[in-house]
Length: 423
Image (tube, rainbow, N blue to C red; front, side, top):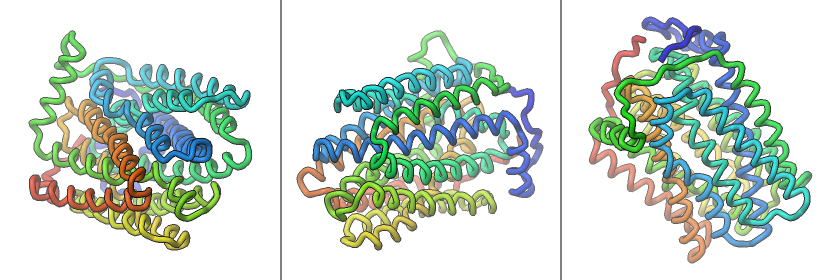
């Protein structure tokens, strides 16, 4: 993959600060980073606002779970296909099309909400199509970031990206809690539509170019399944992806229940729910900043696995606590764990993948993350029978057991033999 302005790394990154400074001085990297930042704000703003709106409107835990399921479903269904497309066509053009369509949809939903004629099925449809945009993030936008950064600075690039994710989650969650109580769902959608215009401007300013990877054939599906077979033959990559599956199915899915637990168990308002999510995002931000500053290149597997254990433990305590203030504090634990996990996840996938397999591996990562909606349905079913707190607690325990199983089946995950980072 070529880029006229690509940073020359060599062994690169002898000092973490130098790696980050070099990336932040690259105009293309800054624009792609900015696209991710704006997308993140829109994502978390909409997720929280829609979740609160649906539980207030319907009173149904299952309805909230279904909306979350539809938002994440494209990752599961189309992640591998997106990875193949990212290797065959211009990634910048693919992002432009996806963002333009999603921005138009946000505008339409905002106008429907403003006219007070919006229906749950329309919100569900909007969540699904927004999920298609999010599905393109891993195999397309993040692969662009890795291409621009170069192999030696991939870890630094993913640290910056992870930091941004948690900053935007912090902002999006806080704004989401405020918007529901002030300008309503219509304000959320219309602000989102305006942000999509900004994203289009940023994308059009990117000079990055990429060339199709070799090894593709005419049949898109055949290439997609061929890529999955190649990934399945890489045992260390499979181990990394299995941990991602565990985190997203048993752990991340709990985010869909935060508004429900806030309303039904803690009896708090939209702003207080937003503070819970913001506290977790703030702690994740701290973890990402520390990770970016230290840029560890050893024991990434240990950090990866331990962060999932810590996250599951925090979620378990959150689910069982009757105290809002304890929940607020424990969100710091889950946030720190989430921050470490998110950095090491993309870094490991990109570093253990062969160059020709990189975009497809990120597509496979999207599929694994896409299992979160099945976890949301799992949680929704448990919550309907046992209540949201018990459902989240059970899922956290299941997740911890699953991580142990991964370590037993793939012991190399704790000591991955990462290739040299020479570009």
